[in-house]
Amino acid sequence: MENKNLQLVIQLRHELHAHPELSNHEVWTKQYLMEFLKTHTNLEVVDRGRWFYAIYHSKVGKRNIAFRADFDALPIEETIELPYGSKYPGVSHKCGHDGHSSTLCGFALEIDQKGSDNNIYFLFQHAEETGDGAAECAILIEEKKIDEIFGWHNMSGIQENTVYVINGTAQYASKGMSIYMEGIPSHASEPENGINPAFAIAKIIDRIPSFIDPTKNKGNVLCTVVQVDLGEKAFGVNASKGTLRMTIRALYEEEMDRLQRSLENLAQAEAEKYGLKVRFEYQDEFPETTNHEESSNKIRQVCAKKNIPMLELNEAFRASEDFGHYTKLTKGSYCYIGNGEDYPNIHTFEYDFKDDLIETGVELFKGLAEC
Image 1 (cartoon, rainbow, N blue to C red):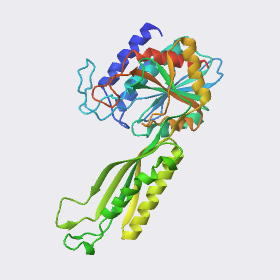
Image 2 (image 1 turned 90 degrees about the horizontal axis):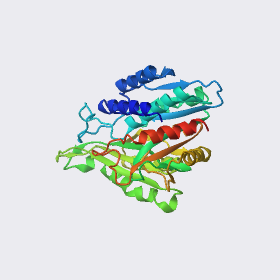
Image 3 (image 1 turned 135 degrees about the vertical axis):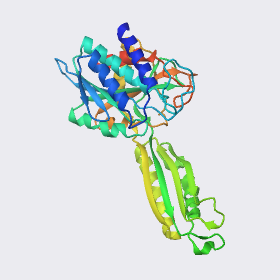
Image 4 (image 1 turned 90 degrees about the vertical axis):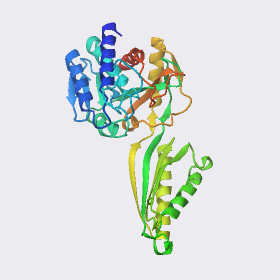
């Protein structure tokens, strides 16, 4: 990578870090990235509202290859001292999306200057943290007949500046599930005259271990109770409303869907038994992120050719990633570049993206652009 390009995108990364924006509110971030590409490249830049993409039109135009980066931040306070620290209280880039977008910009600079035999699409995506972004941006795959798509994430707990790749599932499917139950209030001294959802909610929680029993599932299935909200601090009132919130998660999306159906069926049966109203709500929905072996092999080949350290990922990450929306529609692979085995984890106060990963990401993408 040209040093002038590297220095330019490191400066860009620091600007993005200083101005973090939460999912679906990335107005400044998107505009700043677009202006950077318009100023420093001759690429076509296409604004799609909450997201955008840039295109390198090859004179040869063999294939259409897309590369994706996310640009939203997290609702976490910046507590470490940085010369480019967050200017916004309670919001910071504690997942490294500032680094991902800067890497994609660095790659764009190199392709614009040096060319490619393929048409390259630089996809800048909003709202990865909530799972909204890729579901909206995936329209690009069909509109532009994308043949293959690649992306990467920085990751702590693995060797520094080493690329990790896996075939098949790379990250679990997950979603937030809320069960709302409503009965009838009564005086606490006359519970028989009301309908309290506590017993139904307790029975649902009690059945969770049987639903996630590893002997009954092909892959790992998880159900984490994150909140139980029942009644109020009013000792004279028999509670009539209750909410059970869970994160359901699985190695295979089909098994997460089966867990969802099992929870819904049980909740409906308990509601009918006790005379409760019941409804369900879902959010933060992430598909299973599945890598195609052919695409993962290209990552392996590029690393070997460019002498980029590479290791096989032994198992999928339990945390979710919305990149799976893309690989449902076309070939692709999502890989990881290590921050270091003892480096602070993403989504923690101590974390900051490591600038020296940018060049590794750019060189990997440059190799993939010619595959």
